[in-house]
Image (tube, rainbow, N blue to C red):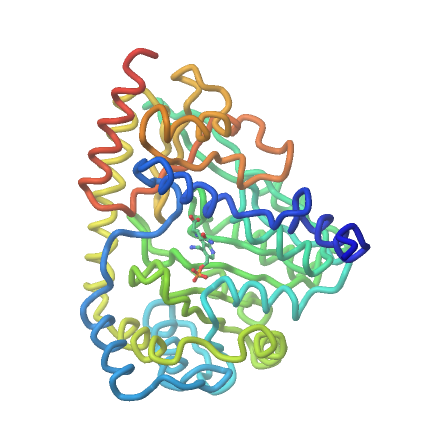
Length: 407
Ligand code: PMP
Ligand code: GLN
């Protein structure tokens, strides 16, 4: 077979193939490195925690009760009702579970179906940069044009790294061809939570350019300070916003792949139109289990976030005393550490060596940028603190031993 035909070139152009091979995600690549070297994996963002008992028990009960066949394409009504109740209780957002909620195979499929359903070739899509790697791949698959708004960094009085986005830069990214703005707050990889002024500017620009807002909120409950504020709650936003979330992070079940979309009925119908040809329907027994999780009392969500906050502090305090400049994120699974202060200006090269040299895996922040865009972030790495305390403590000991001769 001719593997250089136009179809192969198209996959290559979309970044799906590199030199005739499927391009692995940076997460798969670095997790494989952790397994191969026996290094501690602070790379891929999956927790060591078990799900809350009520969630695990509900999944087991659903399997035992025979809920193992295709559920409806839109999702089980009890999950759609639980999502609607959750959005009303936490954010005051009201959605009709019959027509405005769609269950998906993780946020990953929700994002894919949304982009495939709602973008035409040539449409411009605005994202922050750095961005979760799937976004660039999906924009390319849908034939869209990716425009980015930089998250910039500075050092505060305490010597920590502060990451932020400027309202002027957000506004400047919109053009006559902007069809969609794809946000992620709380943000992977930086843990940044967009402030209300920035979100207001985005809503204004989206209205002015008649663009859709798609918001990826998978870290909505993993906040360590101010609570998450969905952009759909801002005046004028709800009718043009597709909100996406998932159970993976909130309930420590990244392998279950249950996510959901909330949006107006016409948008949900269009996204379902794509979703049904991707997976048709999603994880039958996990849907009632996630519904049980979403109904947990608020204190249970807060306890999970507080526990994670303690591990954030353990990692960031430790990295700081080892000599990294660190950002202390407001949310999510990840801290950003600058290795320049330890004589390492190239984090991509460092992350290749670190498993062997220190026995720790991290992800270079450059993996979340378009080629040549990382700039000042070239010396930054992302380290996950969703791991258990012993893993974090041992990682810090190893990094300390590695860094000591460099200070
Ligand atoms: N969006 C972001 C920002 C993520 O970090 C992730 C991965 N954890 C996803 C989407 C994918 O979520 P899911 O595992 O539910 O598909
Ligand atoms: N979201 C996870 C991370 O950022 C990885 C998900 C994946 O491997 N696709 O590490």
